[in-house]
Image (cartoon, rainbow, N blue to C red; front, top):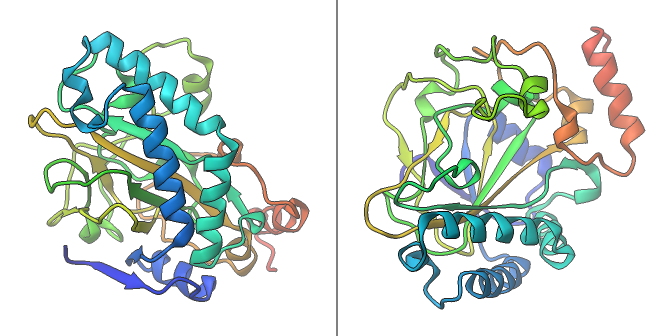
Length: 285
């Protein structure tokens, strides 16, 4: 894989986010808490799918039953205090105090190789920048496999599009309409049909973590191998980036609002909230 740079855990977090907001793709290895996280997660996955080979579990169930099990498992993982706590420990090993970050829950993603009826939460995400939906240019995405990947069963990023605009649906996409549930097939996020440059297929190993700016153009992919892709993804915003004004460039996002409701705020939320308000009114911090 080109474009991926390995960074030692414990690096100063401002150096990490500065690199990310310049478009770098960073990989972290040798994280003791991550080994525990993977062990606990695999046990939960294999119990829920009733197999020691969960990558092939989609072949063992009718599509609707496989979807039901995956959706239920996703909820179990999101509500598991131990697993979520281990992810906070992983962030700490990387260099971020989770108490200083706006953070989303660690979310399980299972992408089968075949179509699943009503598989909204277990299908590959379309080509998008997360920032088109969140509107938060200081957002960082974290992505990690639970089982081995292949180049045709993973996620792709388009690094050459990082600072170049592409046509997208962020101007017309409406967060409130999504959350209302009134339109069953309403898009989960703004997206595009355009690509730019050569994509990078992410084939990091279980036990490694990829970090990238949410402004990167990326998409999930799957193949017809009969194997599912099982991975984690989540998002953070480090409040020190808000205070310092560090963020990725907004080259084509046209959303009107920032959607902080996706995140649990840091413990000393007032400090970052004040800074955010100052930035929005044009004041300097």
